[in-house]
Image (cartoon, rainbow, N blue to C red; front, side, top):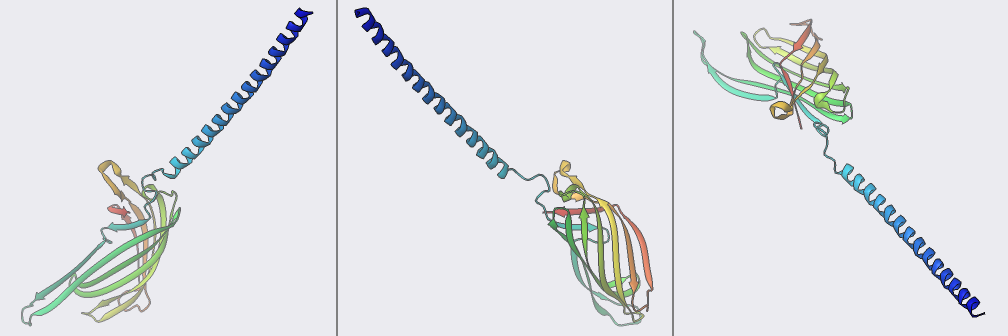
Length: 228
């Protein structure tokens, strides 16, 4: 009888200990699961933060562009001269030359641009003054403009005045071009790209006094663009 009571007590104690062990195991598993879930969330938000702080690729955030070549240089010049021709009185003259070619990225693959050219002075043996202004669009094949191939179309208007022959032409201009930009990072020029292009340029006169029209195909080998 005594042995039976002792055995029953031992069995009860073992059952109680077994239940306690089950509870401890359950609590332990719950703790591990919560810890793993917390680590997973911390890793996710850390990754998101790293992606948000990711440095942009070369040229990715450069939307503003100045383009310059032999005919269109980002420059402005103004000079004052005094000249005398034999048999005539000395003349004071001024010369000015302004050229601007600017574009801005308005979409991942699209740039809108404006071109301004102004000249006042002696060209050859003629005393000329002229100005033209064009607006256009550039379609790129990459969102990184510094490495993109592109096609551009500009339309504009202007005028040209020859003071010697007193001829004035009102001009209409269009330029269609295809080109490719190459980064110069390897030379330490992060913001400068080499951008050769082939352009079809058309100029026509609405007055026809000195010019009817002019058409030319230009291979612009010495052309560069500055991005920032």
